[in-house]
Amino acid sequence: MAEKSPKRLKLEASLSEDPSDAFLRYGLAVQCLREGDVDEGRERLKALIADGPAEAVAAYQQLGQSYAEAEEFEAAAETLRAGIALARTRGDGHAAAEMEGLLDTLD
Image 1 (cartoon, rainbow, N blue to C red):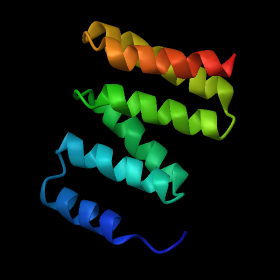
Image 2 (image 1 turned 180 degrees about the vertical axis):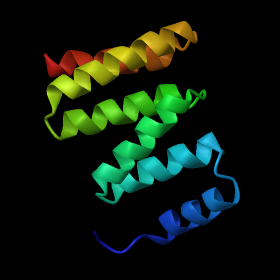
Image 3 (image 1 turned 120 degrees about the horizontal axis):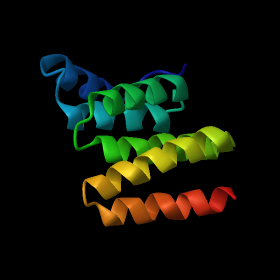
Image 4 (image 1 turned 90 degrees about the horizontal axis):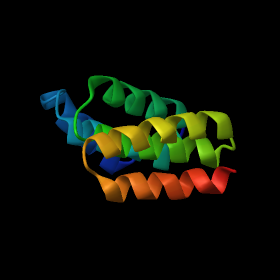
């Protein structure tokens, strides 16, 4: 793995002060993906989803996108469908529509 960026180090430091901060957890997961640390990014997103905070909808979207980019279409579709269901349950039509759009590109 390449050297961690200053942004990632800052996120990790902030998260060590407040490990339950869902927004920081999400930000770090996305930063891991951006830096090419896909396995860690995905695991962080899965953990966030399992904990079920409001950021879980965005985590589903990012995780689904990560799978789609890696051409892991079955995992992408499964993740996006779960995210769409959660978004609808939470009344987040915008997120549901975005994930539906991504899902449509997988067919």
